[in-house]
Length: 305
Image (cartoon, rainbow, N blue to C red; front, side):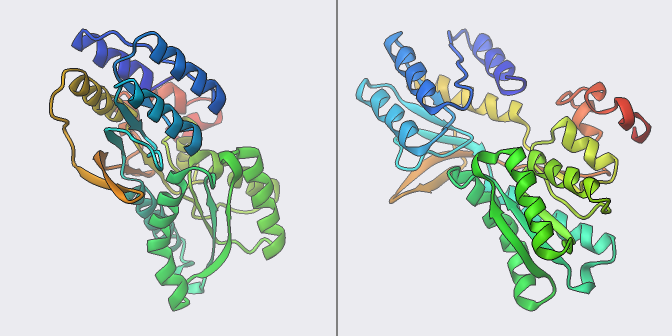
């Protein structure tokens, strides 16, 4: 609503293409109904954000049966029949998160003290969660293996639910006697659940990753409670998806960066590199117009700006 939609609208207007944008509010059944309505209204191309694999794949197959091509937007649909997958490099997101945790442990002097690193992963039904986890594990697993780091509690958070993340992290603290030295958290919402729990227990900040460059995530970074976030400029994503949709509409060759695996086949893809945001470079989020300075620099956070 805040980032993707305005960028999509602007790209379609510029191309003189009519469009309809619906929001299923995370309800897969509602999304299926919306897709059926779009197809009934004569949609020529479908851009879809997968909510669950079964319904998303059914939407793409129903579209294909009507000769309408689909685009996997941000999430790849396992077993789907989309013409292209447009997203950020999920593995690279995780690598940046893993490197952020390592950098945080080096900066606070805990790196050489066999720190306990916990992992708070996204929802287990979201393929992206596994891409992110695969990325940070590629950095952390060799360090666990060598005994440099201790592999602490490691859990998926059902449906990326921040409240459930808080409960899960509270349980992690109980299990370890509050001995968690860093957390690879898959996004800013999960990271904030960690921050809230640490503050509630009177514990100090620990190295903590995030993702999405949300105002709250950035506030946690500038106030010293979160180490980094991964910025995926959704305006770039929306523009790329709109370009693919227009190319499909006009029967032109798709612009791709290569292909990615989807089951036993390869799916054409346009993959965008993500950016790591820390205390050192967070200002580019508002100088570049992604966030407003007032979104971040308000209330108790003003003094960090």
